[in-house]
Length: 118
Image 1 (cartoon, rainbow, N blue to C red):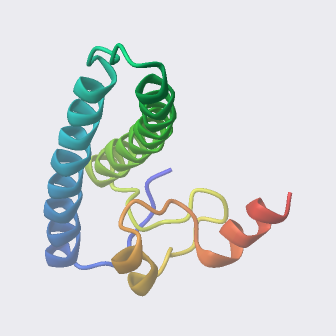
Image 2 (tube, rainbow, N blue to C red):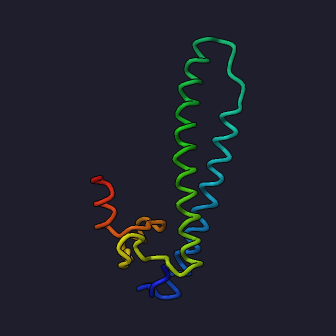
Image 3 (cartoon, rainbow, N blue to C red):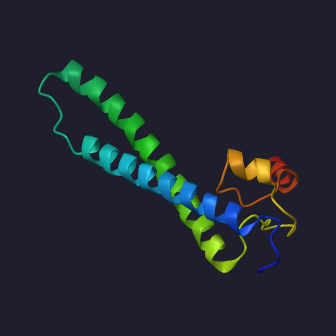
């Protein structure tokens, strides 16, 4: 798809560093929550129920972080292919401010809103 980006090489490099840092943090969180999920449950039934509820929350958080890690890796691939900052739907710029808020965004605001309405 590689179209010319509206971002400067310096901005793209900055986003790449931000994404790599985010990925490292998210992968660390995933490992940490994975370790929490493998701890032994307590002997007391009441504690076991509370621990089970906490485990479910950790599992949901782990799923969210896994999706985020996938999105970050996808953004890093788009940097490598020259597609970073270009909407994957309409091929227009995603927008610098949107990328600052969500560096792994792959859709411009208009297309993202259209996707959410479906």
